[in-house]
Amino acid sequence: MGELVLNSIAKEEKKIGWLLLAPALILLGLVFAYPILRAFWQSLFTQNLGTELKPVFSGLANYARMSGDGRFWQSLTNSLVFTVVSVVIELVLGMGVALVLNQSFRGRGIVRTIALLPWALPTALIALAWTWIFNDQFGVVNDILMKLGLIQEGINWLGDPTLAMVATIVADVWKTTPFISILLLAGLQSISSDLYEAHAIDGATPWQSFRQITLPLLMPQILIAALFRIAQSFGIFDLIAVMTGGGPAGATEMVSLYVYSTVMRYLDFGYGSALVVVTFISLIISVAIASVVLKQLRKVKEAA
Image (cartoon, rainbow, N blue to C red; front, side, top):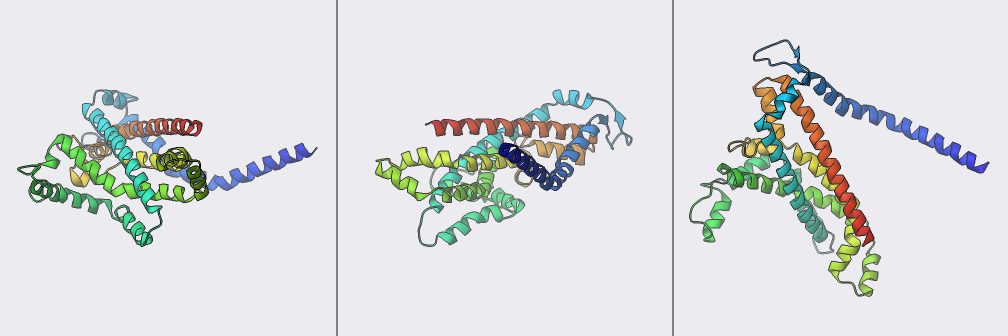
């Protein structure tokens, strides 16, 4: 009898929970689901305002066109490279910054505030500043390297395909590492210091404590931070648009820039919608793979 009552209460609580979640789910559907469904429907039509004002149903022709679009595949590759490299570096640096900020020292509050400033500044402004930092004639980077005797003449950072990608990654890492560090710092502060003290009494080194206590307990925050940054990095637009505009020769053109160029410059709404749909699917797949990998790492850490 008591079990039936408990089951009934549990069902009622679930109903109440779904009712409370309903407004948020409806809002998410309007904000995310509807635009994607609308983009998919529009991708089934050929509509280029430069040549044809009325949309013409063409089925999957836009997707077939995409399979042979070398520019799209290059932009997708650029987005994947940029995302993987920047997120990995940000996680490593963010962890280091979080560990430092978690220590007790004089002026810690001021240091935490200063560490957060890059994230708070507008991305377009930061991108413009980094453009001048990497300028081949007046940039700070070349000036420092020349004074150290590492180079004899200025390097054209934003004019070389490989170096341009490096420059944009550096700028992105500098801006978004504070976001990672703040998330990880919140997780570090939730770990009891008694665990470290007991581990130290057992003869564990700081590295062992970090590997056996900090990392396993911090994996949920690492997972959240990584997924946030993967989504943001994959769809990056403003930083690249200001620093390189996708150049040189498309070396830093991300999918978001290619979609923008297709829709806003060439007015090809049908093909642009197809690009949006495929980009969205690629992002979902990337986030899912990253989530599985991080969860497996978490299980390995917990087992160790």
